Image (cartoon, rainbow, N blue to C red; front, side):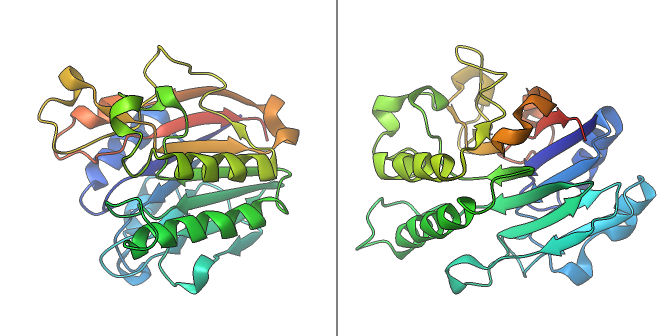
Length: 260
């Protein structure tokens, strides 16, 4: 079995000791990280190599965004895709031992859910459209990991009624997410094993002083697998304890296992 972990770390250099704690405790074989916020030349390669990860596949840009896949095993293929013709560090994919693993960071979409007045929201929907088209052609032996920036179901947020017009949970975004999933026949590896009323949230705003007390979370981070490898996955976990650590990311990791 191989362990795959995905996490929006909100700056790899800021969260480096937290990443080390996660590695020491869970020993993942692959780490799919988002919002690394560092150019490739300054990525902490030595840190990961010292922890037993000789292969680091990077797509970083200055100051924001950025994704990577950290691996114990050498990839036979590496690719990056710049959807919407924007070089903004939102995708990297590898193929290893016959499985394709992709680390994805979808646009957040700004504050106003309107494509006319908010170019960021328009970009988010265009990004979903292009990834959906790509998804329909890449649906075997594949794992999609990352921050999709949408909570697709009513019980993926602390209050559907209060968030239904808030970016990340609007009907148009949830429909875009559903079309994306249907296009590839993707299996939601989190909801397969973790279901409400058990807590499924992966993100809590920094604005909440006591995230546990208020628990005003959303499920923005996802792991999907292609239908043909559904029976090979097991043991999905949301590692929400990281949200309690000093200087946490506002996202928490998700970990699951796959037989490869």
